[in-house]
Image 1 (cartoon, rainbow, N blue to C red):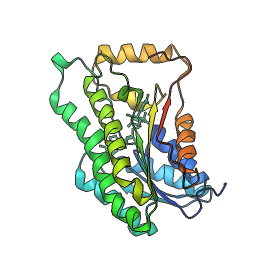
Image 2: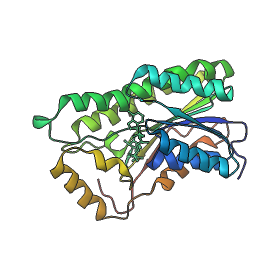
Image 3: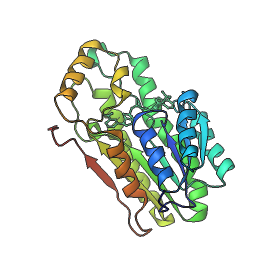
Length: 249
Ligand code: NDP
């Protein structure tokens, strides 16, 4: 274990799989105490147990980030257990893709609640403690879909463009409190995200496209996040846009 994040406390949302899971391990390996949050408690327990087995400290927080009060509670539980929250990684997200004309709007509403409103609620809950200490870091996981909009991804892109816009406005509100804001915008990462697309033709097209390239792995994104949160206090990495070498759009 290295100690770049010794005495730091992190909360990673969506830590039961993929990028969030890898990020929880990477932050713990850098010395942070890590709260891991998502809905699947069994998966979170496995992540926490591995962190503990490697000599770290972990807290499991079962929460649905599509529900504002639960997103806020996750932050408060972390602060209660570890005494503070220094790094909030807003990673929980879903990707429901289909053409606008046939879209299930209830599903899209839920995606907005998870990808945008849950991220906003968790962020808002984290700010008072960070402001009081004059220190803190919010890391928001957007996507290349927050920079480039493509067919079938209209609502997903709306959520990720939303995360990018929210993050930039937030940074301008809180930089004087020495709270940093970073946005990570990955291209295709090989995770479970595509399992829940919910539209067979789109899912097949995306899977075919993804398998045509050497995809990013969750660890690749976790390394970028660790890079952001281990900079000296006067350095704020505002944005990291990262694609597989083989990805064009
Ligand atoms: P995964 O599906 O592996 O991980 C998604 C995580 O979010 C899981 O831990 C899941 O946990 C959690 N989650 C989903 N819904 C909720 C909810 N309502 N409440 C709490 N947690 C929730 O996919 P990725 O690791 O790929 O996705 C992580 C983030 O990265 C997402 O924001 C995604 O948009 C973004 N991203 C992914 C890319 C990719 O190509 N994979 C590219 C660019 C960005 P659980 O189901 O247990 O609740």
